Structures are given as C-alpha cells and as structure tokens.
Length: 92
Picture (cartoon, rainbow, N blue to C red):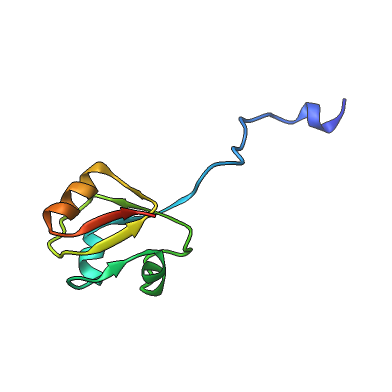
C-alpha cells in the first residue's frame, strides 16, 4: 500500500488564514507618551511586535493617555477605552 494511504490524515491547513500580532492597551500605556501616533512601524521600533504585518489591539488593561492608534483590527472594548481616554482608533 502507498505511503500516503498509510499515514494518518489530520485536518487541513487554511492557506488564506491571517496571522495577527496582538498588542494590549496596558502595553501601549507603558511604552508611549501623550499624543503620540501608534502604528505598526512604531510598534516594531519599540520591539512590541516582530513583524509589521497585521496588528490587532485588545482591551486588556487601562489607558489614560490620548493616543492616535492605527491598526488592522480592534476589539470593541479597546475602541471604547481609547475613546474614553481622548484618543482615536483608526483602522488601516
């Protein structure tokens, strides 16, 4: 019997899956000051993400600084917290 028929078959790999670099609000609070613009390039410069591909901002922690944040995706809680702090959340 051929080898491909003898081996175990396990699921499939989605070729179109998007990998996101995750960043939380408490991390942004530590590394950025008031009024700064946060985008994938600045996150890479500070060492918070490894690649400048797709970035998703999650709502863990608090943010008290008004930041202009540009990312590919945001959680609903993150958008609310950013707006309450006086910042802007812009989808790239």
